[in-house]
Image (cartoon, rainbow, N blue to C red; front, side, top):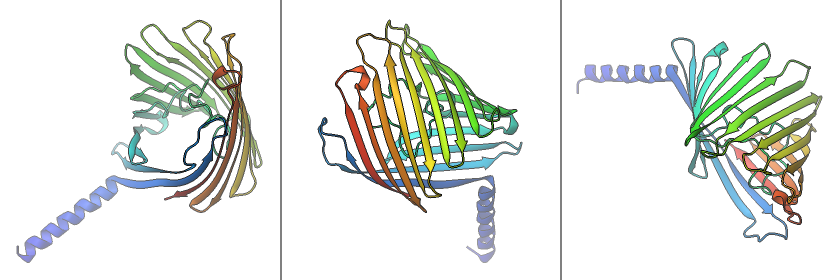
Length: 305
């Protein structure tokens, strides 16, 4: 190959690289966590040590019409976890499509309480009783903010029915406070449909954030409704250290079930890209079964990259 052809190919390759850089970008981020867990004497325990990794591929680019598009792909422990494609139309809002329901609607706002780590029922209540999560795959979402009010909606086709929801969030009604309310429908089957509602409020004063959230799931089956009351407070001790405490109560319509009561403490200390965390949770009358109590503690060290 003569020098002229080499020069031409080099210039072409350079222009393609430059065009790609302008058109979009790709970022790779992730976390690696090592943790020690204790699940109480009431449960069989194996090796208390474990590790977990999360890797996120994020791509984005600007369109000629002023809009932008983004894509996220998440792997957890080397296995595909979730993905989402989003079109940002500026003041018109954001349209998204993902294989999980958490990008918009009631699932995204199912738990808005402040915490320094995990919620009070994590790792003790595996089914998240009373949490308004539609759990649908391949969900279409839409979010828009106008005059201080954010509207978030979701829609998914599930078998013979649909999962859909709408949430409204107000950030400017009261200084340092946020209010939200949402409703959704979960088509569990052709003859079963669960109606979900949730409402919450948070208030921040200095380093302290307080919140309360009330959720309810009305099920088709008789005497099977579930509601959850969740109260939490977090305190930012300084730029690196945060602590939180929460209480959650799950009530059952069924007369044969007892209220599930949970409480938990979390703390986190950040040193640059490294975070030291601690969680201590407990639940009484798990899933409404009197005498079924669970406890969980965890100490973790996470690295972000």
